[in-house]
Length: 540
Image 1 (cartoon, helix red, strand yellow):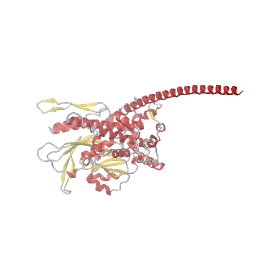
Image 2: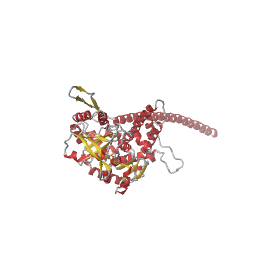
Image 3: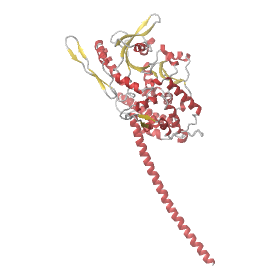
Image 4: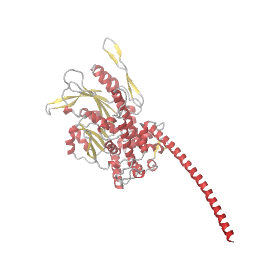
């Protein structure tokens, strides 16, 4: 699969015979900036700099590191259920349980909105006998730029009669879906057996601190019933070295939308614009919203991220700041009434755009845009072909392989455009690292990539990425992205050596031909001189 991706980024685009004036098959035309004039560049830079000025507090890697270092595993956990409102004749979310009970003033402020994020579709509910539990998440951003991540598990409590679901919501300063999915899995398992055991687990987990990347924390659960004491199976929560690609369902995104549409959304996010995704299904919204944000890896979205926006908070979509928002389809009529400009709105269910900005096709350099489309087409096509084995095995293996391959395509895009960043750090007098942004842009030979980097390098996500690298005490950490950069550079060196060898071989061949040709010319000249002399002698 990696070979297919490499081929897609290396091979030229095939020509279009029916369009004589379309020369996009050539590298020269694909690298052209003709469509991006100075006025467009100025508008894009003005937007990015305005975003940076409004939200500069967001981009502070040192502050984030301090928060994580001092934090417990989670800030608080709340259980949200539904209650019927006689006045509105609809169900509304209410807090049923929290731990710890005492919260700070800022935490209480956030807690007022959390029930609506847990049940953005409260108005649709009625008691049911069966319900398959589902997970989703959201991000809350404070005025000082600190972020709180909400990881949710919606489930149906034990019982035989029709009943309403409840949501277990963990609020934490750490972005790590895999770790909290493990905790929510255990909470759900114990909830089905004993509420008391579940609450003990919640209290015990609160005493743990956030493990470092690649580390883990173990919860030893003591169960005392008054007559005996036993130790339950310990729960180990593992934090991945890099969790941003964990539990991301790219397959759901690409089976829902067309490849050019996903690339258009990706382009909008690169320049920190506003994107709204609409669907009638909560789980689909959550998965697709998470997937489009994960396309930015190794960079991370630094602005508002709400996979499912509650109907009550729809006015948030009028915010001038960048955001990724998901909305239930029932909210679309209200959305059309709001004064929203410069936003990309996509209906996931109908696979169509409601509104676009209009210049999305010129954000990504043409050559790389074509490469993205080729690679994604190859992957989505090859991984849907039938193979041997049981249907369950095929489905699971194919799904995981497709997710990995799709992430590799977008990583390759950033390798091509930003992989050389490691060559533009200098050491300061105190031993720290300092990034040379101008040198980073100037050394790129492709004009279209330089134009792209002039804007992208001023985004919050790029600034945060560089701050993290500058803060590395023992040099730049070698994550997945850096590994792919090294592989790319190694292959480029091999290709350059092969090309150099070919050039030398051709040079030697030309030299030999020249030498042989020169000898023939000299022999011919000598013959001519002899004949001329003979003719002169004959005349004399």
